[in-house]
Image (cartoon, rainbow, N blue to C red; front, side, top):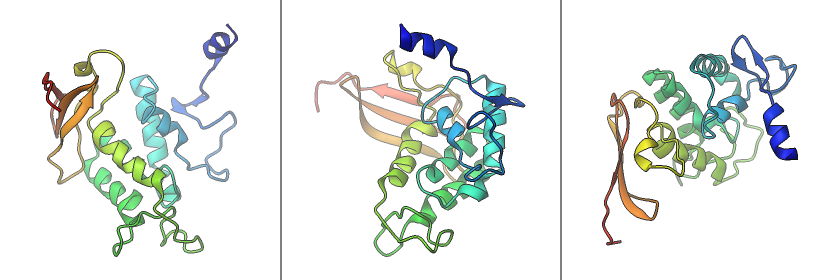
Length: 201
């Protein structure tokens, strides 16, 4: 029961409806722009109240320029901007938070963005940045909150894609051991998961 008691009494630090990174958080502290609370919203799907989620997204996206170029979470910014409905910003942040990490010659994804951190070695491929981008495409932008229940309930919000994007389509994925297709069209009320119900692999 110890873990259950701990979980029941955990409380997120909130200030002005914004989830704080920790008790006593100050945006001026070292690494204060790190969007760790946004990672709680996606990819971990913390069920924040809508007003809290929006205030938290607004707060940390306003600090994006202070963080982008760092490893780990930069690639997620495009998803978070799309969740606010800002298509242009989503496009710009996918470029700033992922595309500018990629070496044109070898398509190698660096750990740090070279123009923002010229003192850092050009180390890669850095899989956290790759994974952040690839996680955002089929899960974050379509709004797929994966659970053990009916896959048709996983799409959880209207589809907002970056400017110039029309749709995300995955022709084949596996859902509960069944082949399926994902279609997320910009402007749709929900993305669609279409199960094949076929025994063919």
